[in-house]
Amino acid sequence: MRRLLMHSPITVAFLWIVAYLLLTLLPLFVLLLHPVPSGRGFWTEFSVALGFIGLAMMALQFVLTARVNRIESSYGIDILLQFHRYTSLVAFFMVLAHPVILFIVQPETIQLLNFFEAPWRARMAVLATLAFLAMVITTIWRKQLKIPYEPWRASHTILAVLAVGLGFGHAIGVGNYLGLFWKAVLWSSIMLVSLWLIIYVRLVKPWLMTKKPYVVEEVISQRGDVWTLALRPLGHGGFTFQPGQFAWLTLNITPLSMREHPFSMSSSGDRADRLEFGIKANGDFTSRIKDVQPGTRAYLDGPYGVFTTERYWDSAGFVLIAGGIGITPIFSILLTAVERNDDRPFLLIYAASSWEDITYREELEALKEALDLAIVYVLRKAHDDWEGETGYVDQAVLEKHIPRHRGSRHYFVCAAPVMMDAVERALFELEVPVTNVHMEHFDLA
Amino acid sequence: MRYNIMVQLVAGITLILLGTAALFAWIQTRTEPVDLRRDTVSSHSHDGH
Image 1: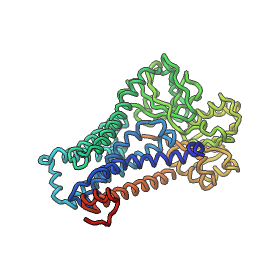
Image 2: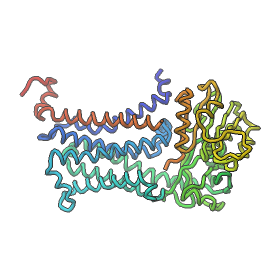
Image 3: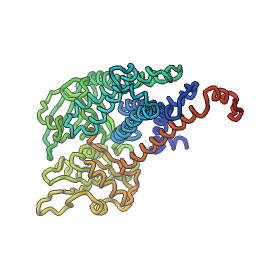
């Protein structure tokens, strides 16, 4: 029974949430071991508790974004990043509420905002809050502020280290609680682990990646303004992956520069000697892919992701729903199925803007020979003699094509967020079991 | 829809954290520090001073 429970994704996810809560609240539990500072009221203690919880949540963000495989395999990286975004906002409001409550119950403390005359502990708090504020603003409104991805990512890390480091410095400086032995031990451990994670992710791991370089073999133009970037491992065996997974790609520069981008592999998961990525030219980095010369050095961090048919070995077949460049991981799933002589039925519902823009169209048609594969193209702009589906992948289209025994298949959806939401809702209305639906947002940034 | 579930999850976590912060503040301020220590030792809260 215990074994069975530990293999249920819901149980595992639930245990991670409990662990998250315990870790966030641990600093407060440890405080209860110590005598209470005298002369402080309920609201002061409440404000202090919010400050500690906010700081613990901020420190835990380093764990959430460190690409820890065990956590990631319970949820998928897009869900983890969404959790990271939401909990960061909660932490931000707790950190803001901490001084606001103090200013209300002890109005004299507002003088601590006078930066030039305030003690260092207060200055650190102000600087930490400003760093946190800058992080929140540049992340939520990155596109409106026209901040390119790479500098944003670098500044995000620097601001995060500043916010947490200064926050810790503030807590030590105030010292009411951090003068206590166990509290100091606990917080020092939290800070050391956070520091180690950031050093590992930004320095150790990139350095290890430099030991396993790849070289660009060719860049192939595909339909729909997509480019296939083919890499060959240089002096090592490369890696196999579960079809549908992705890797972080660094091109033509050292991985230590922190300028990597996530892309799904589009080749077979069993081919370690040649890894291909389908990349659509729609951003600063992606529109330069077509100019990459064969022989260019590349580095990969991966594979990552839970958007893979491999986890559902017992499924009677698969329904794959792709929109635009969302075809990339799904193409990898199909290629791997061919290589493994998979005899289960595959249904691909593929939305594209026009017949000419269907990425991998010829290759997909060829796969029908080797695989029990049915393809339904849904075109937004169809030519006059088109007899297939048009418009969007809505409930009517899905109802017409997906199997009557909904639960007999696993459903993989990869598309732009609007289409993903619509398809998810439609599948729910069509009584497809929620646990059979798997989704991947390709827009992680 | 999955993100709606996520919003509910994070809202739930936030409520638990706020509730625990309030509980912590209440425990820390319900009595004078001296009383609290004696309470902890004797496990009685009604024995006064």
